[in-house]
Length: 188
Image (tube, rainbow, N blue to C red):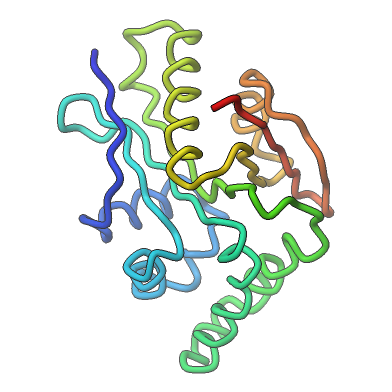
């Protein structure tokens, strides 16, 4: 098995559908495909795929610190022009907007927005080998964005995420209500 990391802004509907299906508390479910596409095409968020041959085995989306700090403003502006979105998802959007409001993070951090792993594509290798592959690709992504630290957040109920990130030496550094924040500094 030869895995490769590919940065992409193609097949956005397919990627959006996969993210929304697998990460049910993603804000993009409520903001919609057009919002997601706009962020990708304007290079606010970046999409990477881990592929085995030509098949997608994992999807990662990241956002840099500057864009992470301004995303709430982008969302508000979008909602002003699309008020119907507010009616259908007011509480979810409100919860999401408070996620990182008081976070003290370094401006060189890179935020991992989504990580969707198709575990069946990694069954022929050991768990340790899988973790090494992800570690290698995390480093490549960080290097491309001139960062050394990857941080992320997820709901405390997400046991799979907690297990994956803990096993891969990410450390919890913040908690807001039921949202956990983990980070890991890499040697690049």
